[in-house]
Length: 53
Image 1: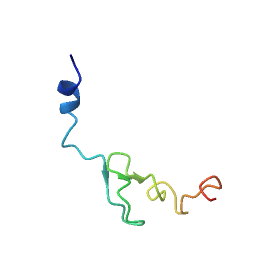
Image 2: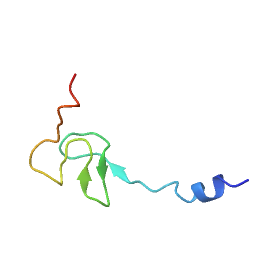
Image 3: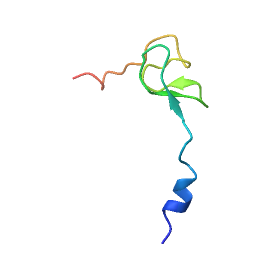
Image 4: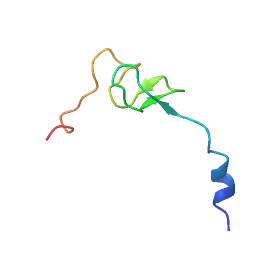
């Protein structure tokens, strides 16, 4: 009956914070890069053809 004990240690830590460029809550603190707009990795805005309809 395991589950909560190990997962409970992970609570309280924030991996993502608000991005300076796009404003989304997708900036990774440790990697120092935004998964939404690509800030920290590239000067260009992160966008792919499969994103658009």
